[in-house]
Length: 236
Ligand code: FPP
Image 1 (cartoon, rainbow, N blue to C red):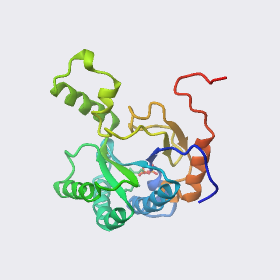
Image 2 (cartoon, rainbow, N blue to C red):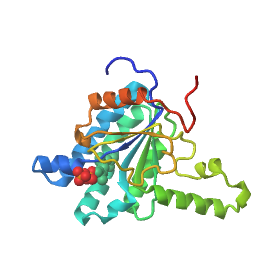
Image 3 (cartoon, rainbow, N blue to C red):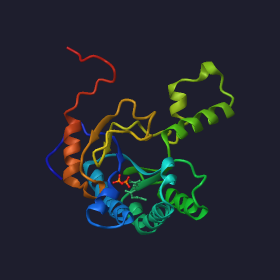
Image 4 (cartoon, rainbow, N blue to C red):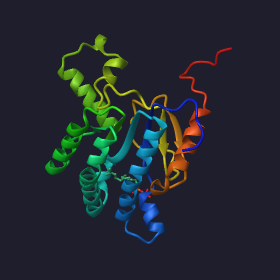
């Protein structure tokens, strides 16, 4: 960890892109890139914990990712399964609370159960809240929120931004201050659409498996120098 930084984000969202390109660069199968990406998660989470970041959301599998080749989809599902087996004791020990954001339908029953176990085993933890966006889509999340609100019988005049926020998968979690995307893309790709309305966006060409402590430091430093106005004008 480098020198002190004022103005750290409270919540960071990571779009962990570039695993495939990382693997290709090395003549490896795409899944080897995802495995390296999962390994890297441990490093980044530890660094976030050291910086005192309270909330981290990772984009692990989008609703669009089902369209990838079957072998890759199965590989990604297995990876989460293995990740939970391998990392859960450490997450518990380190005070990480795991939350799942996304739809459960479509996820194999066995994996659903594993995810529920990880959520249950860590629910008392408070040091770092890790939201795992798995089978997640920002538009689907808004659709699901609207359905819940209608099912509860709210009247049109009762609907406001707070009501919608409190029916999203992220209910109770503050909006992200910073979205970091690796591998150079300049898109949100359906990630935290509602919640990132005022988030700062940071893109780096570095592929996710290579995004290390130094890269995180650069992103945090960049964030700390931004002037966030939330649609207002600068005072004075
Ligand atoms: C994008 O890289 C990455 C994903 C679709 C999956 C992200 C998953 C991980 C980092 C590991 C999984 C972690 C857990 C906990 C399951 P890409 O394949 O689009 O890369 P490319 O754009 O270079 O092809």
